[in-house]
Length: 268
Image (tube, rainbow, N blue to C red; front, side, top):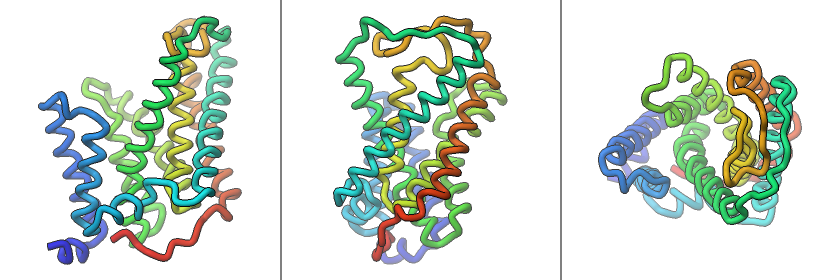
């Protein structure tokens, strides 16, 4: 059975993989206790194992964990760059809206720590699920732009929520699609998930601490922003994001040529 699955074309493997994840999403929507990142990671690993034939290939072979010191450096660099990207994006937004901001003098340090742990786990699961088995299988058989597109679409759909308008769905797909391209390029340049996990975690963590999309504050916020919600429109919020992510993609294209590590084995 495993041998037969291994011979399937890459696009069929990836299609079946995402169908299984979609069915898992339907199940999690019915059984609330299953609606957790751990459940989706388990489904992704089991689906990958069905095509690769081993747990090692489905996890370590996909770069789930750092295997050398340079991988840890890549994660740390990605974390720092992700935070910096969010800071620049937020700074541009605040300039455009004219809002004032100040540091929160009474942040909840336990919540800040828990927020980091959650963002790290969320980034790890999402990158493992999307830039793990399916992306790497596509890269082995097709051009990078085909693999990027094949993953960007389901990655964007994952962020679409029930009740969204057509315009909101378009913006969500656009923003998450750009993020997917960045994370995918980070993997292509390094052939490891540590850099994209770091970028993903850094961005999400900084975004959780700084109210970039609307003024206000939360118990785990480091910054208090004073302004008007009406000022947080496409030009002031989405455009700076697209600009910063586009620049990051360009920089990674031209500066990341020496990041790739040799990879002698395939995952499927």
